[in-house]
Image (tube, rainbow, N blue to C red; front, side, top):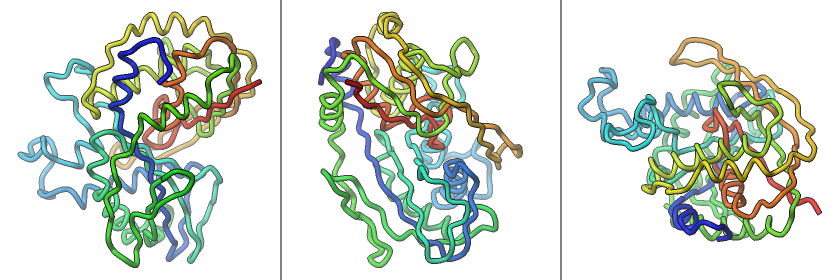
Length: 328
């Protein structure tokens, strides 16, 4: 792993991350909004509660199984009382990301397929079967406008240059994948990005980064690094069992020396309806490309990991997805 801090290398080697591709086949018309991620995540949450909840006739707050509940761990993730981080926050970041397809499909007709990715982080890898059963259940309940039903046809995991199926509807069996070698994947990605003083970041889904209590519209490099440090350090602590012992202030100061070279960004607003909060919510963020110039050596592991786990607010819905490219 390339980087000045040995602690960073050790910590990121504990970041176990797996990306799985889900393919569903529509049995009825499935109508989805422009941003599929919020609908997939909302439907998954309701279905997961039906799969995981043992005591469905009572609320979560007084449940005796609260501390062992898979649903609460994945979907609410309350920080432990003795947590050294985020003790004043109601929930830690969720250990999963649902990546919707890049191409917008308003209606998936019967017989057509829809693919999306599921990213699991740390301990959440142990609960892949719950995600599988939840999406099978969601297919029976229906998704999107009109509650269109579907079959979960296949789940695959990336392996080398291809993908290996670990679940097929015809077999009804989930083959547990090996724990992914995330450290080696990150090493390879860092090597691909090394050796250039100019990088371009393409933001694929709306990205919501806050600085000084305001949403950033034209990000500087330190804005991105601040966001990545917050997200990666909390994911590492709560879900991977490792606290990043780094000089965050020093890293941010050095990130401020990276110059923004050019940008072609636009602001995009997306709406979602929160079933739990009973209201429509706006998920606006910037998309497009921005390029930077400087010495990226110590920041490359963060950029590479951020490509997997996303950055900013709403990452669980698939917001904050980006790709990094070298500029010659």
